[in-house]
Image (cartoon, rainbow, N blue to C red; front, side, top):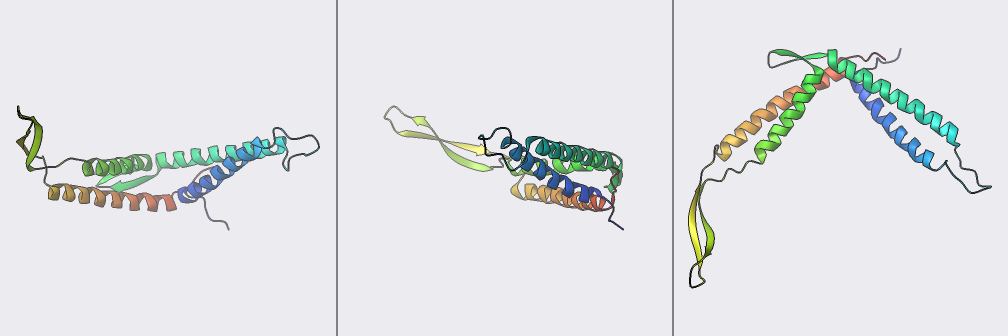
Length: 167
């Protein structure tokens, strides 16, 4: 008895087929012309047929995965959500972590060069910076986001290994 095709297996297979499609495209380029008397190792028609079969398999796999993601669900933070939403939320959490990491949270006084006086001496001004969060607050918020992301990753991973594809 063969193993059922789950989302996880389908994703792995799709990756393999995508690589095969790329190989066949490269091979096709080498079969379109050749020197008289030196036929290519692969024929154009045979390679094109193999390519088209691989593309059709890839389309079927991607469609089955999309369909499974649209109906499969996980429980996250007290809510039942479809896998498609879980995957989008996963991306948004990653983006939010990146966003928070990029915030300028300078606080305190800086001595800033503002120009020169009439005797060509540098003139400075003290600028006071204030930030919406302290570095500690940022770190805590990022850790909370990472914890949510890790929980979501585990839920998606589990669903990917148990949700079957219909081909």
